[in-house]
Image (cartoon, rainbow, N blue to C red; front, side, top):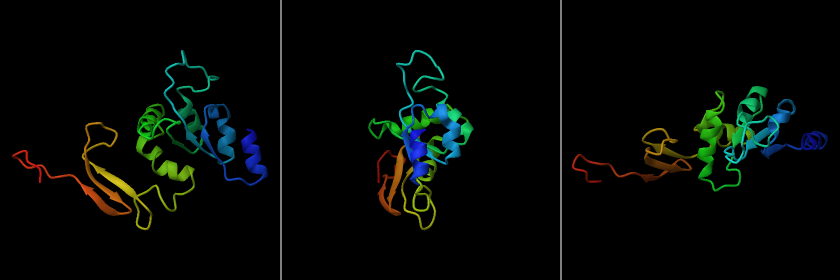
Length: 164
């Protein structure tokens, strides 16, 4: 709440990162139009859900219900953890989509959606084309584009099992 007051008083464009107790003041965050980047959502050491614990399992749903703009980050873990965190967040709220939490929602929260976060003409984009759902470990990378330029294309598999 102090950060919200400071941002209002000094016209600071605030984004809250981590947000372990944001659910406790979700309405105030939404009213201030402040975005939230959630940190690590898996907290196996917590013995039970409790509204006043630092990281509760319903935090995403509570923030979504209040109208808070949110995205997910790694929570300090390595960047490969972001996809897992996004899946966990989406599973805990019907209003969240894992891919959007790390693309369009992230660009919106960070207020850079006029430049990145979507596949549209004129926007910067690095993206990967997958054989299936990107969140499915069985999906394979088919191609990679950086700045709209193809930089990798998977070899085509033939019937004989040879790659071309």
